Image 1 (cartoon, chains in turn blue, cyan):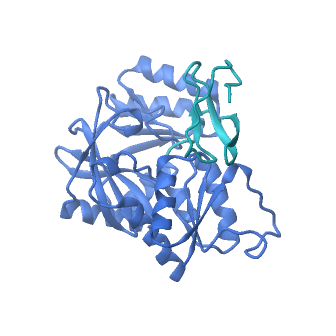
Image 2: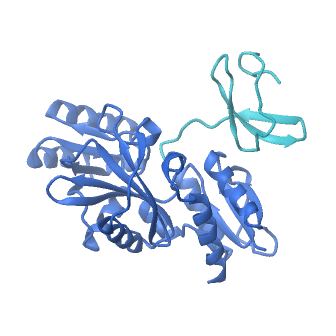
Image 3: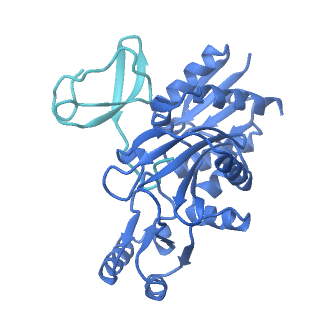
Length: 285
Length: 55
């Protein structure tokens, strides 16, 4: 029997399903709220109990990332690894690593000041999509269709002026059906996939109301997702694909704390079981 | 238990766990279950959605 620790900052149905699955498989679990947990530079495996393996499931990206660093400091296996989360949590780093590994991905432009971004947009032409480099659920993902919109969005970035507001991530608009594909991979292997259909706008996030519909995993999808997973370092991932009408499948995002309450409704795969079994295998390695 | 915001009665399911969010059906305020010991439950104001929240 092993002890699986599930780290959360907001207990969602996914974390409860993972806990139940681990118990059903005969293992001990420990649920840890990251918000009330302390570490220090003398922390070690003997004086702090995180079980045999940790599943990091924080809803806050930076909280989860820094928590992961602390767990790796204790030499306890954690899913996902710090290196994986730091890549996947940042859209610019993800785009770069995908391209570097010859994985089809939308053409993306990077600028590092408001003036440079506007100059770049005018040079490339409209429409483009602007996305925050860190963020999820389609938040602040905005189509730029003309100069007025670009001016307004970029001016707004200057007002909020967070450190990442100075990084401008601009992406081509992919000619695709009004849906994308979410594939969950575990240990570089796709285990389930769904279409996420837009509920009206161009965004296809389930968190925004997109309808999940089962998607059969084709050989092309399997090959692409395996390559994408390996490129970022593996683990448990949510890989988002778009179907470009001319160029075929493209990977546009990889999520490192994948939500699956949408997919579980339509998939026959026992997703939490696959995740827990992978976590258990990680202890043995 | 009553809502700290509007004093309406909060409906806390028996199987609610620490870390879960409950919402007041009257005013919509969100609270996080911070402690649970049998039927004794403590709540605190839930965190608001952060810029870095998501998957």
